[in-house]
Length: 346
Image (cartoon, rainbow, N blue to C red; front, side):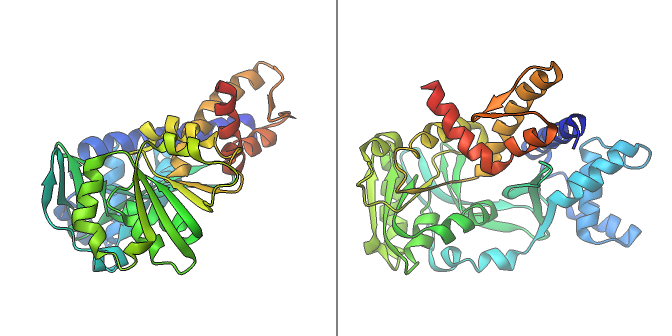
């Protein structure tokens, strides 16, 4: 891989994230059932193809006469879009067994929200390929999908929707022994790991008393294995400071951010604890999205240095070629580098 090809990949990654950010924040409900069905009927294509076509047009791409836009749609947009099934998520154990009532405590409220038919949504973490191409996970339901959520002053803060379910699937699978989760939310992770036979206990660290009270009053009593769960009302970093190599914690899952934008600095702060707490397995919510920010930042710096002929050394290794740079920016290496960067800053 040449340095210019790698730069083109990183630029396209950033371009797609920018386009999707605008779409999701401002236009996510503009693709309607009527528009999709018109294309399906007129062109004889499936709903996903129709959705991709409408999405590309909404993003300002010319997929008729502009070759670059045609390639961008084929290589980035089309692979990023998935049509979701209502039945798959409505059969999730949490949504089947836990009934969320409407309730309010202070500025917090237990309520519900809904995705409209063909409304765009993020449903999983970013997929990263060997060549460092990043494909976001955009999706839609063909029918409305309702889900429980918690709002603070009317703003959705926590919800049990596809993104929550899919991005926690692997961390839940890996959880074992004495588990700690930083952040309570609506207790999805807590519930799912408490159901596992190889999980002995679940300690939840949550700093907001209102969130804890809502959970204890309306959600926790419905958990079958509620006796496994202990909730500590404190700041996540204050709790981490109390842990040491003799702590009985086996697995720690961090989920104290709303999205990648506010999560990145918190992620770097938590990473510095890994070296001291090597007996604990750390996992992080939406880690690939967080690493995407780090990848873009480091590439920008490294690209300028390499183009200028400067010597570049990372983790004691001299970066001499484009392949070296690509390896350095892989997710596995970035996870190591993230803890080193934060340690150096301190």
